[in-house]
Image (cartoon, rainbow, N blue to C red; front, side, top):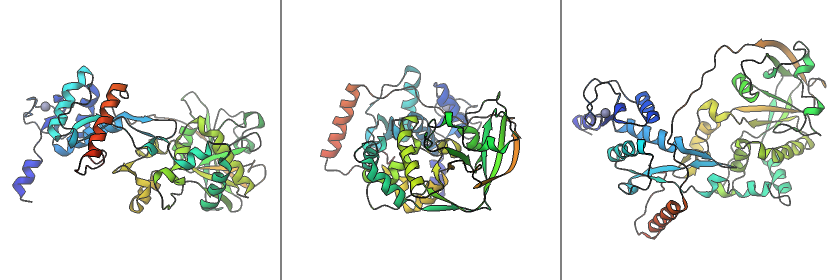
Length: 388
Ligand SMILES: [Zn+2]
């Protein structure tokens, strides 16, 4: 590519002051470059300038990530865009966003539309549906126990258990599994099976305990007395099937789901104990918020977890939590190495913005379905709407 052409491509097309929507303006300011020349669109000299690459980042961040809608299991963005929808005006945005969206559509030659997600993204995954079905769940749980690898937690490793407002913070027993009356309240414990929840990531411990600045916090550093056998549910399975049939996706979605999913994860936990494991390593519910990962991230509509080259990336976006069965401190499987007071001295949040738009009305949905049918009937091969 000739150098002058490169310079032309990187010419700023818009600036952060081009926009009216406050969230979009702030996100554009964060993304854009300092440049005191007059904006060719609005004439401002103080806005951060946006060339095509910046605008692509802004469009994806604000309209796609900013409309991610979590469903019972899984989730997907409400809005997507591509060049085939250019000029179609599929979405009537709020009055303050309408002109901003047009500026972005024109700069990128694209059109925004309400996205009809692939059904696996919103929980249409066979092994997950089977786990919810009393007559079929046992078979899937057996598969989980046999397919996922074992991790040996060695005596050289340490992990943390956080307590808020314990009665006697200096006592080792305060850091064991909760007493009888609290059993059956969390993701993996049940009246039959107490669980000591811990993590090697202190920030995750703090999130998981839902602490506030008013709480008195204490953290214990723990180590196994001898190697512990853990069922590792953070592993990304190598599978030769689609997302619809994927056990890996089923377990991933299970641990991203809220308390409506606990009855299933508790049964997996009981089965792992019966199979002789000392505990489970499982993905923290807060993995995405801790690592900035995109939940159920896709490339061309396929989960990134399916691409061998992305496996390391997807694994790095998972924060493991440790769940140990029984009362491992009382039974001397785990030793308390140290106890500290933990003082919160700063709380900061990372955030971005999105439009207020909600999922499409029935009429808009019908329009979208008609459009998708047109694409299917077309002789031209269109890429997936996610291929933007
Ligand atoms: Zn401008």
